[in-house]
Length: 304
Image (cartoon, rainbow, N blue to C red; front, side, top):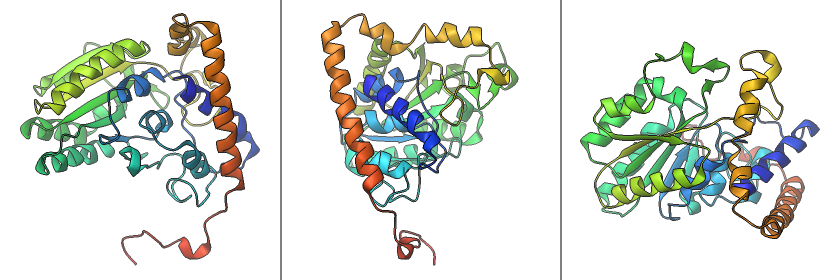
């Protein structure tokens, strides 16, 4: 969690230099979900994500240098500088990719799980998405198919209460919780505090073990909160869609600060120093890497 936080704070600090020319969606405040979930996965497992994917990519084992190079549009980036922040991929780490189209990677993850089952692989697929994706028809189709085929997949919903600037209250009935949508399809579904990394870890552990044993899919909803603006490095509480009071209440529930109480200060300082060195080296690598050449523009395109 600390590593993800420090990486994203570095991105936020560098972004105004105008050298990263892609949109960035930061997960500062939400680090417990990627950390707690991915701690249960092995490199052979699959994960797919959405536009807010930095934490998922890093927690799954994605290469930091390649990620930052991608944000700078460099050829050494994980998508060769063509995708930017919202199209991260690292096949060596089992991170199949991210897409900004809401709900789009849900059927991709289900398809990957189907492929794993057909190949008789002991591989689990985790699909990360926000609560807004549960309002897409493809979510319900995918949940139904995963149940029908008893697929080794874990649906992980990061409910940060907002879809861009729209709160849940204008999008879903107040009498219904998000996890009940999957439960209504007959899927085993759970809800927990997404800012408590141990609760995230323990709940995911059960779901991953169940999937690996061939006992089918699970839906997990983790309530959490993003601190920064929907898209960009700044804070946007002044725009009026959420209050400063609400923001401060959630900030008190910071997953990192609360877990730090369980560690001695020297240990935390040692970790921070280690991560700082790693991050500075990654930034240097990204800035010094070359841009893609013009002739590479049409490479890896399926149609001429």
